[in-house]
Length: 54
Image (cartoon, rainbow, N blue to C red; front, side, top):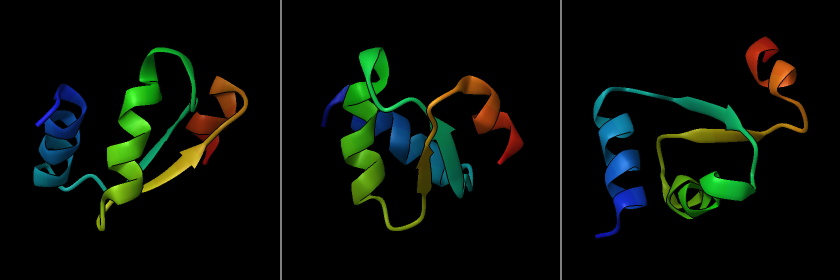
């Protein structure tokens, strides 16, 4: 298990249903386990303000 997998498992355990954020940069490793999650829906935003207003 990689660190990104552990982060997503912890979010699932806490009941997180939605995540918004940028799809590149330092967060890129998180997007694979998010896509594989059956309980978390991800929204990739183009600007940080949009992620807050979803």
